[in-house]
Image (cartoon, rainbow, N blue to C red):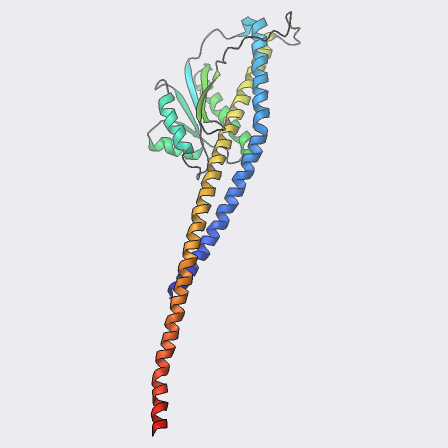
Length: 284
């Protein structure tokens, strides 16, 4: 097969890859915009819950738990899909430095992160992570179910809970969510507030809402960082791919010109004997 034809086939294959990468880049861009738009609202919600808990505890300190956590649970958030650079490697590396004791329970959220931890020999419980914004509630339900199952197996012992995840800026951070960080109550009320429910019941409801929201904020921040990494990866890959396409296109034009030159030479060489024969006949 002529070299220029083979180069044409390779260019066609790269064109198809270009279409796939462009579509993946567009999806990553859409996810980044969607996640970034709602990130601040959810952080504001979390801060409002923290303030409400601090106000309640400031006026009713007896609602605070007396016993500390009997063990630690770390929820490490990575990616369910690949093509996101060193997103999962950074989480796995940070996790090696963050675990305080071998007794820590580790929940690894995301198939790609679980694979990295398995390669490093880190014991963990693998959970399915979100692939897109719509998957966050499902992933959140899986984390809550795993935490509840662990609590039942440990006779309802209260664990300490920390979340390790890439933040929206891509930096991996550890956040302690339980026990809650101590916050001073805001001096908004001169007297004790009049509650419609018992303080302990209200505290329990606020804590449940706080833990659920903190996990959701972390999941969405990790997913945002993942898609930003994926967007960077896609843009770099597309740039390199198009450079390669241009190189192959130049090689194809050069090979086609060489093939045409060879064909012309063959035609000319085939015509020379005939031309010589006719010259001989005219001489006779």
